[in-house]
Length: 372
Image (cartoon, rainbow, N blue to C red; front, side, top):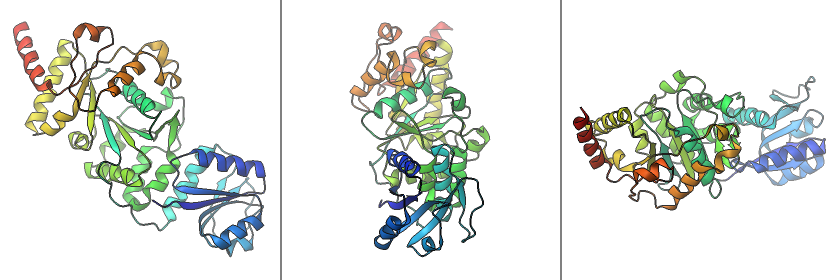
């Protein structure tokens, strides 16, 4: 997708340079960023190039700017009264850069006339699901670790689709907008979703993520077709090589979402109750004629995640026993059958593949019947 031009003009050179550097460091931005510290250089550039969005300070704004080849103008305000040269919206200049850019991108997404993106090219964006019918199995920390390690060499976007994710506390962050706002926007202005999305993206090291929904009700109201459309648009953007879906059970038709994944990692446990729940899960898949989903699942017995490491999030994602486990897991070809030994599993050194898991479940069912 050809990038639009986003120009920043502020007579305060250090501010302009820092904001432009911040935008350029955000590799996911759909804009080509141009920075100017005087009106003359801005006018010369605009004479040769069409500017899609201009962010300009109050002291630089004048009638001359209105004559330039610019689609959208937004005023960088320091809190003072803005000259009434038109109906340009304002954004407060001295706020965290991520919040400022989120506001600017939100405005542009609401007002720009760009048509919807083309459907995703098959195979262009790899989608990996992480799901488990069990609780307290380390699913989210595994998904984050997986994303962090894949992000060392590839561009990765992580989406948490759980009802209670705890991200604000876990990462010591506050979010002015989250996935709920993005999904609501998609319903209203689907073709410009990428501009809204690009302003909301946060990062944990090299792993990008969208702030998860705060209210579980917001996710439960999203229809499966909306999720599929959302995934197609991210894929059509083409900016990410890998999309990781941390799936929860409240998602409508979650098995259909799993069908979009090339593989689904499923952390499990080996106690009797967990085995019973997993067997029910497998029977449910069979009853719903989802054998294709079954083939995508790779069951995992994760090493214990130590409490001390949790205190060091997010820095600890790429190190420690779990990270070593994930690196070994990724060394094997996706979908390739693996085996695991129970003794190695207890030591946290196992790796689990899943082509034969249906047979294993039947064997375990017989063991449970013998126990009774």
